[in-house]
Image (cartoon, rainbow, N blue to C red; front, side, top):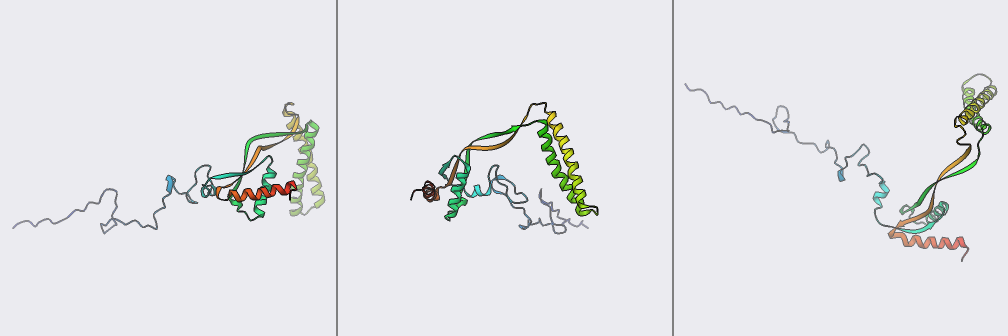
Length: 214
Protein backbone atom coordinates (compact mmCIF):
# COMPACT_ATOMS: atom_id res chain seq x y z
CA UNK A 1 0.00 0.00 0.00
CA UNK A 2 1.63 3.16 -1.18
CA UNK A 3 1.74 6.38 0.84
CA UNK A 4 -0.57 9.14 -0.36
CA UNK A 5 0.98 11.93 -2.32
CA UNK A 6 1.54 15.14 -0.41
CA UNK A 7 -0.28 17.84 -2.40
CA UNK A 8 0.17 20.57 0.20
CA UNK A 9 1.24 23.89 -1.41
CA UNK A 10 3.06 26.48 0.68
CA UNK A 11 2.41 30.09 -0.38
CA UNK A 12 5.12 32.50 0.72
CA UNK A 13 4.16 36.17 0.51
CA UNK A 14 6.47 38.51 -1.36
CA UNK A 15 8.90 40.58 0.63
CA UNK A 16 7.39 43.83 1.91
CA UNK A 17 3.77 42.80 1.04
CA UNK A 18 1.41 41.71 3.78
CA UNK A 19 -1.48 39.58 2.51
CA UNK A 20 -4.98 40.10 3.75
CA UNK A 21 -5.76 37.72 6.60
CA UNK A 22 -7.44 34.54 5.40
CA UNK A 23 -7.18 35.30 1.67
CA UNK A 24 -3.49 35.28 0.82
CA UNK A 25 -4.06 38.16 -1.64
CA UNK A 26 -1.91 41.30 -1.30
CA UNK A 27 -3.99 44.37 -0.36
CA UNK A 28 -4.71 47.07 -2.90
CA UNK A 29 -3.84 50.62 -1.82
CA UNK A 30 -6.90 52.79 -1.43
CA UNK A 31 -6.29 56.09 -3.30
CA UNK A 32 -8.49 57.85 -0.75
CA UNK A 33 -6.08 56.94 2.06
CA UNK A 34 -2.89 57.61 0.12
CA UNK A 35 -1.34 60.91 1.27
CA UNK A 36 -0.78 63.49 -1.51
CA UNK A 37 2.71 63.96 -2.74
CA UNK A 38 4.17 67.45 -3.07
CA UNK A 39 5.79 68.67 -6.20
CA UNK A 40 9.22 70.17 -6.12
CA UNK A 41 10.56 67.80 -3.47
CA UNK A 42 8.81 69.45 -0.48
CA UNK A 43 6.45 67.27 1.60
CA UNK A 44 2.96 68.65 2.22
CA UNK A 45 2.21 70.14 5.60
CA UNK A 46 -1.05 70.55 7.53
CA UNK A 47 -1.95 73.62 5.42
CA UNK A 48 -0.75 72.21 2.11
CA UNK A 49 2.52 72.38 0.24
CA UNK A 50 4.87 74.91 1.89
CA UNK A 51 6.48 77.65 -0.16
CA UNK A 52 10.19 78.14 -0.47
CA UNK A 53 11.92 80.56 1.97
CA UNK A 54 11.28 84.15 1.01
CA UNK A 55 8.46 83.20 -1.36
CA UNK A 56 4.86 84.16 -0.73
CA UNK A 57 1.80 82.91 -2.63
CA UNK A 58 1.49 86.27 -4.42
CA UNK A 59 5.14 86.14 -5.47
CA UNK A 60 4.70 82.60 -6.72
CA UNK A 61 1.79 83.69 -8.91
CA UNK A 62 3.64 86.83 -10.09
CA UNK A 63 6.75 85.25 -11.49
CA UNK A 64 6.94 87.49 -14.57
CA UNK A 65 9.28 90.45 -15.09
CA UNK A 66 8.58 93.77 -13.41
CA UNK A 67 9.36 97.32 -14.53
CA UNK A 68 10.07 100.42 -12.44
CA UNK A 69 7.29 102.91 -13.20
CA UNK A 70 8.29 105.58 -10.67
CA UNK A 71 10.94 106.49 -8.09
CA UNK A 72 10.38 108.71 -5.06
CA UNK A 73 12.49 110.06 -2.23
CA UNK A 74 9.77 109.64 0.41
CA UNK A 75 7.43 106.77 1.18
CA UNK A 76 4.41 109.08 1.30
CA UNK A 77 4.98 109.96 -2.37
CA UNK A 78 5.18 106.29 -3.37
CA UNK A 79 2.04 105.61 -1.38
CA UNK A 80 0.28 108.49 -3.13
CA UNK A 81 1.32 107.07 -6.51
CA UNK A 82 -0.14 103.64 -5.78
CA UNK A 83 -3.29 105.25 -4.36
CA UNK A 84 -3.66 107.24 -7.58
CA UNK A 85 -3.40 104.02 -9.58
CA UNK A 86 -6.09 102.43 -7.40
CA UNK A 87 -8.39 105.43 -7.85
CA UNK A 88 -8.12 105.00 -11.62
CA UNK A 89 -9.16 101.32 -11.50
CA UNK A 90 -5.62 100.08 -12.13
CA UNK A 91 -4.92 96.51 -10.90
CA UNK A 92 -2.73 97.56 -7.97
CA UNK A 93 -2.28 93.91 -6.96
CA UNK A 94 0.25 93.81 -9.79
CA UNK A 95 2.38 96.56 -8.25
CA UNK A 96 4.80 96.73 -5.34
CA UNK A 97 6.79 99.35 -3.42
CA UNK A 98 10.45 98.59 -2.79
CA UNK A 99 12.71 100.65 -0.55
CA UNK A 100 16.43 100.68 -1.34
CA UNK A 101 19.48 101.69 0.70
CA UNK A 102 17.81 101.03 4.05
CA UNK A 103 19.29 102.76 7.09
CA UNK A 104 18.45 102.99 10.77
CA UNK A 105 17.81 106.57 11.86
CA UNK A 106 17.77 107.42 15.58
CA UNK A 107 16.26 110.83 16.30
CA UNK A 108 17.39 112.35 19.61
CA UNK A 109 14.40 113.86 21.43
CA UNK A 110 16.14 115.51 24.36
CA UNK A 111 18.26 115.19 27.47
CA UNK A 112 17.32 112.56 30.04
CA UNK A 113 17.85 113.20 33.73
CA UNK A 114 16.88 111.22 36.80
CA UNK A 115 13.94 113.53 37.35
CA UNK A 116 12.65 113.07 33.80
CA UNK A 117 13.12 109.31 34.05
CA UNK A 118 11.14 109.29 37.28
CA UNK A 119 8.40 111.43 35.71
CA UNK A 120 8.15 109.10 32.72
CA UNK A 121 7.97 106.12 35.05
CA UNK A 122 5.30 107.81 37.11
CA UNK A 123 3.20 108.39 34.02
CA UNK A 124 3.42 104.75 32.97
CA UNK A 125 2.71 103.56 36.50
CA UNK A 126 -0.32 105.85 36.77
CA UNK A 127 -1.83 104.40 33.60
CA UNK A 128 -1.28 100.87 34.88
CA UNK A 129 -2.79 101.83 38.24
CA UNK A 130 -5.81 103.28 36.45
CA UNK A 131 -6.31 100.00 34.62
CA UNK A 132 -6.12 98.01 37.87
CA UNK A 133 -8.44 100.47 39.58
CA UNK A 134 -11.08 100.15 36.88
CA UNK A 135 -10.98 96.36 37.23
CA UNK A 136 -11.38 96.57 41.02
CA UNK A 137 -14.14 99.14 40.61
CA UNK A 138 -16.11 96.97 38.20
CA UNK A 139 -15.93 93.77 40.21
CA UNK A 140 -15.74 95.22 43.73
CA UNK A 141 -18.36 96.68 46.05
CA UNK A 142 -16.26 99.48 47.55
CA UNK A 143 -16.19 103.15 46.54
CA UNK A 144 -15.20 103.17 42.87
CA UNK A 145 -13.62 106.64 42.90
CA UNK A 146 -11.55 105.90 46.00
CA UNK A 147 -10.25 102.64 44.54
CA UNK A 148 -9.21 104.27 41.26
CA UNK A 149 -7.53 107.19 43.02
CA UNK A 150 -5.60 104.86 45.29
CA UNK A 151 -4.37 102.58 42.51
CA UNK A 152 -3.36 105.57 40.35
CA UNK A 153 -1.33 107.11 43.19
CA UNK A 154 0.32 103.81 44.10
CA UNK A 155 1.12 103.07 40.47
CA UNK A 156 2.62 106.54 39.96
CA UNK A 157 4.84 106.24 43.03
CA UNK A 158 6.15 102.81 42.13
CA UNK A 159 6.60 103.84 38.50
CA UNK A 160 8.66 106.86 39.53
CA UNK A 161 10.84 104.72 41.79
CA UNK A 162 11.51 102.11 39.12
CA UNK A 163 12.12 104.79 36.47
CA UNK A 164 14.72 106.53 38.62
CA UNK A 165 16.42 103.25 39.52
CA UNK A 166 16.53 102.14 35.86
CA UNK A 167 18.14 105.43 34.79
CA UNK A 168 20.66 105.35 37.63
CA UNK A 169 21.62 101.79 36.66
CA UNK A 170 22.88 103.01 33.27
CA UNK A 171 25.66 104.92 35.01
CA UNK A 172 25.20 108.01 32.83
CA UNK A 173 25.99 106.17 29.59
CA UNK A 174 22.70 107.19 27.96
CA UNK A 175 21.48 110.54 29.27
CA UNK A 176 19.15 111.24 26.35
CA UNK A 177 15.90 109.98 24.86
CA UNK A 178 15.52 108.99 21.23
CA UNK A 179 13.23 107.36 18.70
CA UNK A 180 14.49 104.87 16.11
CA UNK A 181 13.02 104.32 12.66
CA UNK A 182 13.95 102.38 9.55
CA UNK A 183 14.15 104.59 6.44
CA UNK A 184 15.08 104.08 2.81
CA UNK A 185 17.00 106.48 0.60
CA UNK A 186 14.66 105.82 -2.33
CA UNK A 187 11.31 104.12 -2.94
CA UNK A 188 10.54 102.52 -6.28
CA UNK A 189 7.09 101.59 -7.54
CA UNK A 190 7.21 98.44 -9.68
CA UNK A 191 4.54 96.98 -11.94
CA UNK A 192 4.27 93.88 -14.06
CA UNK A 193 5.66 94.35 -17.55
CA UNK A 194 2.25 93.71 -19.15
CA UNK A 195 0.67 96.72 -17.41
CA UNK A 196 3.76 98.93 -16.94
CA UNK A 197 2.89 101.31 -19.79
CA UNK A 198 -0.57 101.98 -18.38
CA UNK A 199 0.90 102.63 -14.93
CA UNK A 200 3.46 105.06 -16.33
CA UNK A 201 0.77 107.00 -18.17
CA UNK A 202 -1.32 107.34 -15.02
CA UNK A 203 1.66 108.44 -12.94
CA UNK A 204 2.64 111.05 -15.54
CA UNK A 205 -0.87 112.44 -15.26
CA UNK A 206 -0.45 112.53 -11.46
CA UNK A 207 2.81 114.46 -11.78
CA UNK A 208 1.05 117.01 -13.99
CA UNK A 209 -1.68 117.45 -11.41
CA UNK A 210 0.81 117.90 -8.57
CA UNK A 211 2.84 120.44 -10.53
CA UNK A 212 -0.31 122.38 -11.47
CA UNK A 213 0.10 121.81 -15.22
CA UNK A 214 -3.07 121.51 -17.33
